[in-house]
Image (cartoon, rainbow, N blue to C red; front, side, top):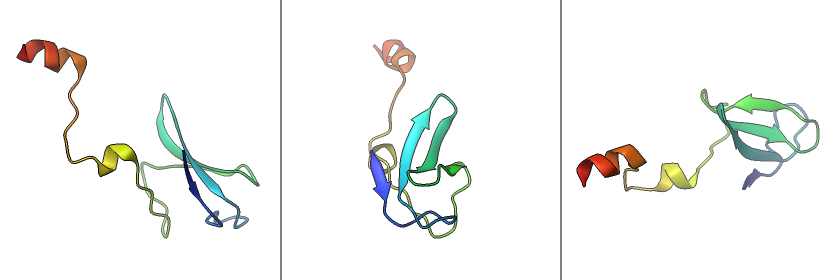
Length: 67
């Protein structure tokens, strides 16, 4: 779980990066504001383990096809 302290554009509260079936989004712990991370908000940089990884990920089907 990633937290961005005092980064909410509405209330300057703490933002938490969350993921659901639709993708990643930011959620303010104080006021409840939610923003999708598909279009990054100005001034908010989010680094996820997936983005930081230099190794490309393969799906299960791709791995079976390669074997």
